[in-house]
Image (cartoon, rainbow, N blue to C red; front, side):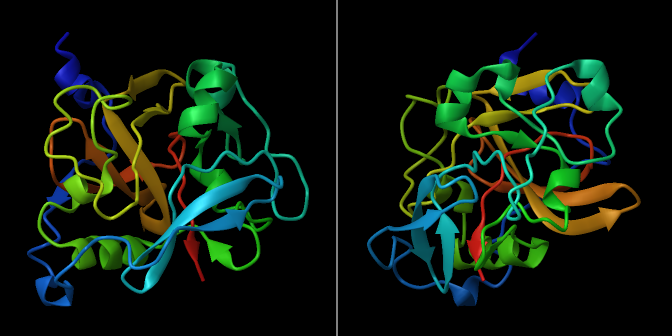
Length: 234
């Protein structure tokens, strides 16, 4: 199988609207798309400290979430079994291939039930971004927003990591995802991120970046998939 297109085997219902957000609202762009301030930090529900970055008028996490607790202290179940994962209708997390070492770099993958849980993945003052929050980010970055969001080089991204500069400071990492049947796919090839906005019956808007594309993809996905999470400051 051609690894460059492994994601097409599963990808994600009812696929893909690829938006080159530079076309939409390009007048929102500033002359510089680099970080506007020095990185700050955010402390998560577990007490983990994350780097953040200001992009336009938004403050984003500059790392993938790797929390094991909701805001109220309740545990987010770590579900490793494929059959159990595929049958869930409640919040869960996992490390890619159930490897905690991998989670140290790429964060956890969360199903959307965890994102939507009223106990909150995000600490006070932060939230899972809405679909509109993601659009604001990509509009601000303009044409080829993906290259400005992806970590540069091939330490984590597979070659060619087309055009990646990370000039925004967002530092997107290719954490892959977990399919609704529990299979893991695409580590090194793609980064998939939840929004908090539903996109139809049992579907949610998400964003993805790929090793061989410069754009940001917007699509609706099944709630049972496991994606990375970035938070935005309220």
